[in-house]
Image (cartoon, rainbow, N blue to C red; front, side):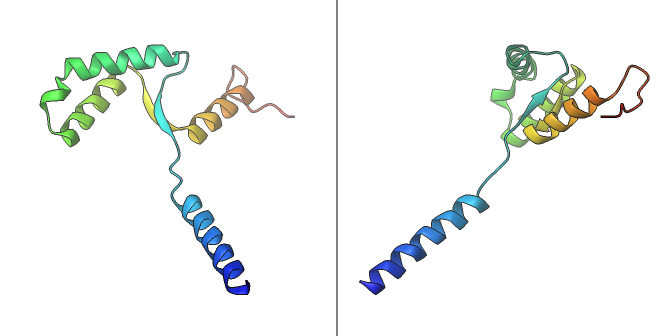
Length: 100
């Protein structure tokens, strides 16, 4: 029983460590004032404009990124986007931080 208990605990610990180390933050294209649908539409337009399906993956990703950036989008993780929005909300029109 003692060996079974230790094996179970070890298996759970390995599972937890593996789950924590495999986390990849979600990232997407972001443009202030643009809806998720607008972003998805623009991404589709860019893919079509650059004929991405006929390019090697790495090259397609690069030219799609150029296209999206030319339309005012930036590629941000969720935490970067949230930090950007928080910082922006703390600024007044003159660009000075407001006291809490």
